[in-house]
Length: 97
Image (cartoon, helix red, strand yellow):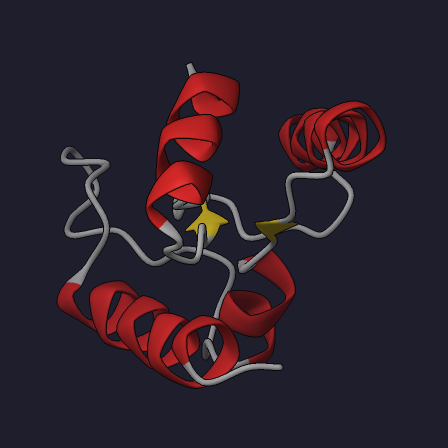
């Protein structure tokens, strides 16, 4: 579980950084799935002091459209989505305060 992982990582003195990979076939802020993520993120912060980074606003802001999938039949994230997510992790998680 996330709580157990954080405890183990805290014991080693390492920093625990956590995010998720949003559904890229519909980059809509505050849709049902995003609201569920926000609820989970809030729950983890309030109950376990675990911060989870939310990349959806960054993906939405840096995407040309609301769908970033490989093709119409394959719902996997496109290379462009991976690029934006990598930029998010690098700039907003690894080198954030």
